[in-house]
Length: 172
Length: 191
Image (cartoon, rainbow over all chains, first blue to last red; front, side, top):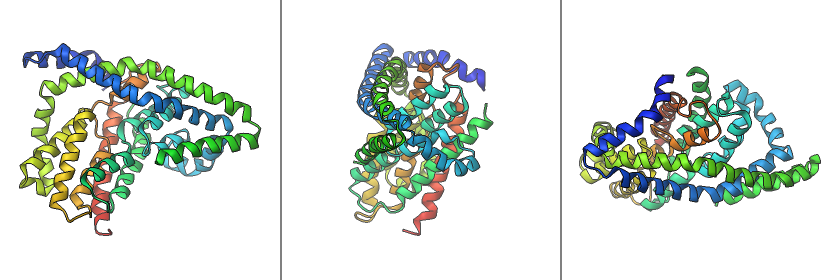
C-alpha cells in the first residue's frame, strides 16, 4: 500500500495523459484549462484564508483555544480523537477555507507526518462543507422544509471524524 | 452568514480571553502572523493544486467520468428508485457521483443541482422527499478518490509521501457516507 501511494503521483499523470492522447484529446490544452481552474480555486480560497487564519492564530495566542480543548479532552480522549483537532472539527461543516486554515495550522505545528497532522488531513479529505452543500442543493431545488437532511449530514461528519482518528492509527 | 458569526465569535473570544489572561499583546501579534502564514500557505499550495487540477481535467476529457458513471448506474437505481423511470435524472445522478469521486467539483455541482431539481418534481411541494435528502447527504459526505487539495497542502508542508493518507481517506469516506445514508433512512420516519 505504501509503495503504491508513493508511485501514484509519479505514474498517474502519465497514464491519464496516455489514455487521453489515445482518444484524441488535446492533452496540453486540457492540462492548462484545468490548471487555470486550480488557479481560480486558490484565488477564491486565499482571501478567506487570509482573514480566517489570523482568527485561528489569535484564538490560540489568547489561550482560549487551549482552555476550550482542555474542556473537551475527557470526551475526545475516550473516543480516541486527538484534542488538537477540535477547531478543525467545529469549522469543517461551516467553511472549507476555515477548515483548511485550521488543518494547515495543525500540520505546520505538529508536522504533516505526525499523528495529529495525518488525522487533520484525513478529516479534511473525507468530509465536505456540510452547511454550504445543503444550502446549494435545497436552495436550487427551491425546497424550504429540509426535514432530516441536516441531522443525517452531521451524523456523516461525526462518523467521519471518528473514523479518521481510528484509521490513521490502524492504517499506517 | 454562518461564517459572520463564526469569525466574529473567534475574534471576540480571542480578544476578551487574551485580555483577561494577560495575553493581549500576543493576540495582536498573532493577527499579522496568521495573515502572513495564510499567504505562505496559499503560495506553497498553489503549484500543486494547479498541476493536479490540470491532470483531473485531462481525466474528465479522456472519458473517465463517463465510464465511471455507467458503472454506477445499478447502485444508483437502488438508492434512488425514481431514477428508474426518469433517464435524465439517472444521467444527472451518475454524473454527480462520478465527478465527486474524481474530485471534479465544477462538474459535480451542476449535475447534482439538475438532479435535485428533477427530484423535487417527483416529490411533494416545498417539503423535501427522502430521495432529495439522500442526494444532499451524499454530497455533504465527501467521496473523493484523490483528495488532491489536501495532498497539495501536505506536500507544501514537507510530507514524506503526500498521498500515503489515501487508504485512510477511502475507509473514512466510506464509513462517513454509509453513516449518513443509514441516518437518513433512520431519521426519515421521524420528520
